[in-house]
Image 1 (cartoon, helix red, strand yellow):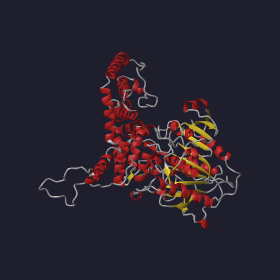
Image 2 (cartoon, rainbow, N blue to C red):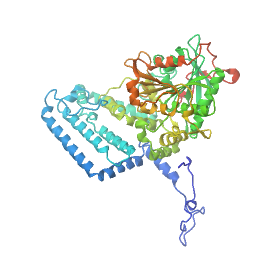
Image 3 (cartoon, rainbow, N blue to C red):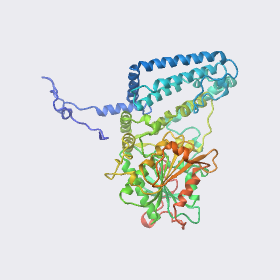
Image 4 (cartoon, helix red, strand yellow):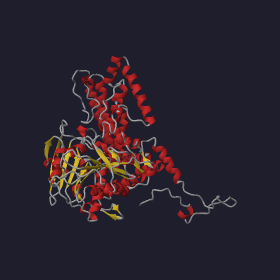
Length: 606
């Protein structure tokens, strides 16, 4: 059921035609002559206030999941008996381990999960810390058994309850306390507590920065336009939502088809132009491409009503018009990253529907088009949670940077919250700050209407995959696409899992080259040649080829050492014409006068 995003006040008498009289004999009528009206506005305000203290997570959604689990567990005596049996067996394992725990090199009775680095230090193998860590890991395993495979619990609620249990266990991990962390304890003894004093200063500095809205410690060494986003170019178009940057060529001749990059507005574009040695944009320019890139405006309260169609019209389509004016009669290699890739896929499908053939190819970098399996981010997306977020955004007109960052930090709380806290506040150390961390700290906001449409239309209803998503009042279908596709997934992506990204091959009948690289959502994409320990798999599926599932892809796709950038450069070059003289910067005669040097104005706004 679709509901308007605006707060609507409706007389109760219209809602309940058969309602009893509003007043008793002798009681005065309400001043406006109405029985009363719903207090939806107050409810939304209350939800917004709660959301400011819960990192945007809906308490009702957590309660629903917990109640579902508890109710079904209470009605499952066999599962309860199984859990009692497992608890007894784990207690036995720990008891059998205890006599050997004081012996050097004693084998563990349970090993941490591969991604769990909390107990890697050899000090955790010594008494009594080995016993403490083993007891914790056994308890963690038991809680996983308790929250999973309870018959009748919905899959989503099971994932949420498992997530809650993991978060609570992470809080009480022995790694988080001075007395139970041998590494911290040894440092404390060696420095006579100076590490804790330094950690307290770090905590105070971080708290002051958070309250003042200042960037993280260490980010001062990185400045946009100084040592970040420094590839030379000019802003050739600006509207109320985006700037279009055209980059200066570095080669005598360029491929005739320009490359147009659509980044996500959940992030600032310069993740693709971090520093010269790690800039995908500079790499493309040096390979002889004319490169254009959108830089989205960081929305303010006045931008609350910008929706997905506004991002298509003012972002994608306006930019394409400008590129066509600067590079006339040339098709465009379109590239979309993350949410920008989803928007690009929607726009490309709308163009195909309308017989608009201006695109030469489509490249999707860590971008989902089917949201039926969105990965861990789906923990925070259901009807209850989306309604709660809408109420938070209704209050301010946008989703704040902190609320966005908080959700992603919770997904990886071990690495991004607790391990960092131990290092910064207990060990008294600061991790070296790098360009990618500086970019990650330079977060953006999400406008109310767009984010609501995005969550409901794509995540909840999966309208794009079902050919129900509307552009210009008419549905678009990815099946209409008829152009080569290069699609990139990253192995450890928690934002756009590669198996979800892979589903593009079920939605189109295009020639598709799917590449899977190691790394995560950002580090896997920012993978310049020469970067150590990089590899990727590549497999091309012809337009009339048979579908193979992700597991067969892993077995069949050849693995290559090095950066996927080189493979993509070759793919683009093979679908480009004979190099020509570079185009001019902008097209003043057609209304596209250069407005200033890159990186432009919008990227500097906080």
